[in-house]
Image (tube, rainbow, N blue to C red; front, side):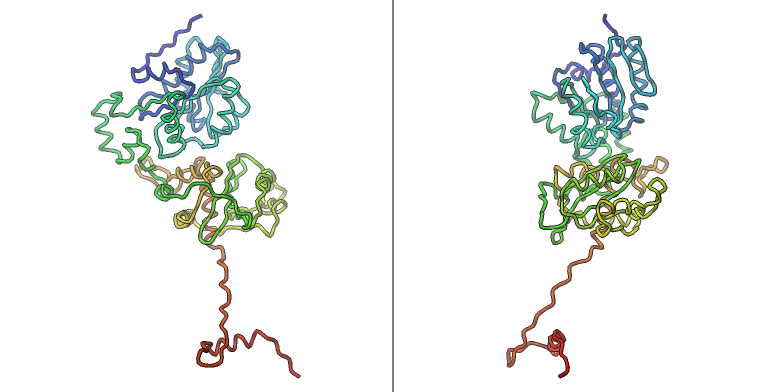
Length: 438
């Protein structure tokens, strides 16, 4: 039975719909129509798939975003081909048995264990870098499913790396880039007005698909462009310290670092969601590092009813030892951000183990005030917040870390013209020895 989708593609997207490669990278300017193209591409795939129990997914950075941006489109274009529509699950069952579900990368664990025949990742520049490798790529393996990475640039992050991969392996990847100046989708007058009203970097990023433009409102944009990123080996002769930002219903983030002279070596990182203190400590101990101090935020002292009146530091001390726990002073967020800025030139990040944390620092942004049309000094709360807050704990802890005491200067007591000892040196030498009366 043939199914007709009431969709007329824009000419600019015909190549995308007719692609034959398993992997695709779609870079498009704002208001190009990529969400509508994504919806219909998925519906077509669902209706033409020959596999039993075929399942497809549209994934946005947040589930609420997926619902507000794409859900109404899915219901409209599915039309009579939909057998059932589940509003609470954001799922459409089609008459041939295929399914399409909407997800958010903010709760990637909801997709763990599922298998997909195809997925469309919208605004991939805003995804956690770990979502692809740990959850989505394995979910495509048994069905050899396809994937589209789509979005508008946001600095040289994971999406930029996907673009580089697509350009490097054209025999396996479909790549398409739609710049506003080339696509002719938006009228010239509208583009001229937008260019006059937006900041240059903002226009280049949003309309001309520039990965070089600075991320607007990023706290550490300039510093992270110059950051030292590469292999950073663990030195087993030195202790490893940790810096935490702790949350129960939210993410918990932890940085692992060593201090070598004036350098801070970031050798590892992890972030988890919804884990209890016991499991968080287990993850720390699984690393098999020789630990020094574990730095916690000031609210780790607060006692909670859920933990039988024990504070977080008391709960963690059971696993990590009370003598290794330290509470970071309660500085303001702005003071902590300044501490990070001063520390970053001295930091060396392990590219592989700290990938998600590095990306969070790059994208950590100010909140945008829609009324005043400007950025506030307060950070925007998203997936970047917890890694950035943990890094702030590290900066404050490192700043107050006591410096090693210089060894006492030894001066030889020489008789004659070569003598350079002072009277203070003589008395200091005299006091080294205990004398008793005879």
